[in-house]
Image (spheres, rainbow, N blue to C red):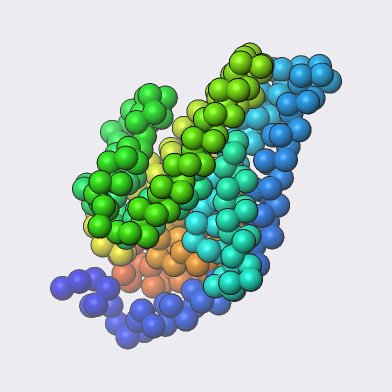
Length: 297
């Protein structure tokens, strides 16, 4: 019998959903600040480095930090967590989603539609666009996949979902943005080769490695199919504020509308539900999700 169905009425899905809804209302100004902020800082590095106001090596370090902070704000936009269903605010999802990803040289629309398929088919070998990285054998394999550009193989999923017209339309729109970003990269390579290498291409690669490891690999290690089985709670030696609290990523898979900075409180209240329904690692979730309890040496 399915674990979710066998859970007592005390832990019904209706009650779980009602609790989650309380944490899916607040406007996420923090994510907008981080997303737009890192992109603006990254853009400001170019004149500062080119005019020798700051050295290239320090620009490289700052650009890499920006790249590591670039994906999460866009990820929230992918779920419409800025507009919250309000048509008048939908432009926020598109603006933040696209602008923050310039640092990573990724097209927002491609990431958005493939990420939606990841949620729909998590751990499905044929249909989950993140399967290759979430089921990698090691961090070394992840690094190699990102560096050679085959992580993930988005073109494959354009064929897999060929009958999904909305997917195809968004994907094609994203490809145009991708070509524009690549053209901009090539122009900058011609004009400022060393600066482009250390301010854009290499930080983007390092940021992509960081993102793939913490957003795709760690949350899904050893998980299975099923709503309550495909993502796990885990602990790590890196404090959660330095890996975007991805130890808590399982709650996002259960309730994507919960804002990122509201996840800890939601998890604290939902912990009995998570244990009852067999979320991997749920027994190890602290009663209060603070800074140190998620660190494991």
